[in-house]
Image (cartoon, rainbow, N blue to C red; front, side, top):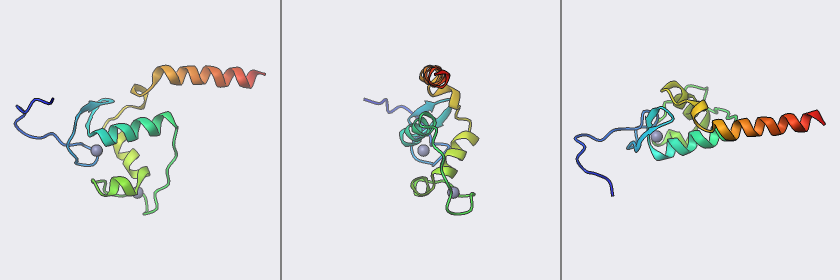
Length: 100
Ligand SMILES: [Zn+2]
Ligand SMILES: [Zn+2]
């Protein structure tokens, strides 16, 4: 299904895996795209176990989510591109709940 005309493989800027295209404003693989989306939608907070400066590659991306997410942001992935609409809806709902 994919065209094979590309001269060189484009690599995910986060982990170096084969990129599938631009996701949330940066060139990434499907794995990092999904990871970023899940992290943002769940408002996930990760904790690095290795001192906070992991070099993310295809191996480390599974080991350290905090550094992976930080690298996603560092290479230009945009949280506001993930779910503007559902986020607004969730905010409205939580506000409504707080008001009671
Ligand atoms: Zn990746
Ligand atoms: Zn780390």
